[in-house]
Length: 368
Ligand SMILES: *Cc1c(COP(=O)(O)O)cnc(C)c1O
Image 1 (tube, rainbow, N blue to C red):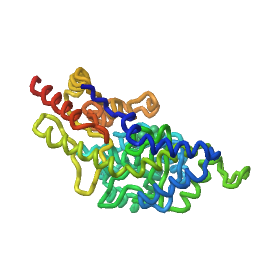
Image 2 (cartoon, rainbow, N blue to C red; image 1 turned 90 degrees about the horizontal axis):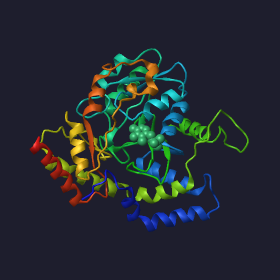
Image 3 (tube, rainbow, N blue to C red; image 1 turned 90 degrees about the vertical axis):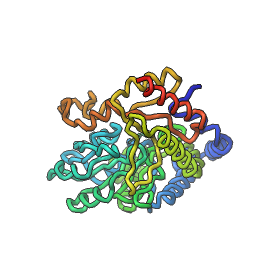
Image 4 (cartoon, rainbow, N blue to C red; image 1 turned 135 degrees about the vertical axis):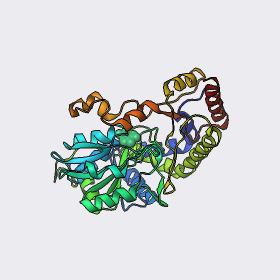
């Protein structure tokens, strides 16, 4: 049996008729930039996350970058980022001319360790970007308290956390803004690149609307120096359909996670842990083991697709060689990069496929 890491075509097939009719409607509308499809999705997504404003943009990276620009963060500023995250979190800071300052994660949750933030602050620190990694909300209460005390902005990276809840309230309006990615593999995924920012702050929303559209509100009148980063109406049409199924699909992911948790306890694997404050949406199901590479090879031999999120931490990438962070400088993130393995996970993972994965894991540790 083949078990792909994630079967995007199966997800598409499930909603094919509805998605294709929405996409056709958009194609036939004659409106190819902005317009009612984009506005309808922005409204629906804002309502879903209970935020006052949603501004669609072209990608998750742009959502982060433009949100930082809207907060007036730029050259000379420092922004706290997790050492263990996808590199986009860091790149958005760098692209604004600011400096990403990494803080190590908690071993238990993979998310930024709030107790290590204060020692990383300087007079230049302007913001904190907690990432709700793998679909599990970070410890927002502690992070927001630190931010309040030091006058810092909080921009949440929600790229992996559509629909997750922190202390009972959906991610989307806890911090100053939340950056979202609708990359196809995310819990709410488009048919290409797409992103958005949600915020309670009307000034940030207004700035974002200018920034994404050449700094312009009225055609050929440019108030600020903006970029071209707009949410495509075809993508918005598809996203409006998929948003209706997000909770149901997240519930199926949760059932898969429960299945793994019940079947894998007892194996010499560290399973994901979840604080009571967080209701995760299982973007990824990440286990830890010192024999990660052997395990990944053994699973691949049985047709099981797995991925490593992420094999090289941002500070060890050539892209950040200029930051001069040597091996061992962020040991928790480095060890995670060596030990984490993401098992097949998704709304379309069948029970038979999951049994196959579980059997293969049991066999591996029996033989080991
Ligand atoms: C996917 C992702 C991004 C970037 O989103 P894109 O839409 O691919 O630009 C940013 N941060 C995290 C944590 C992500 O997983």
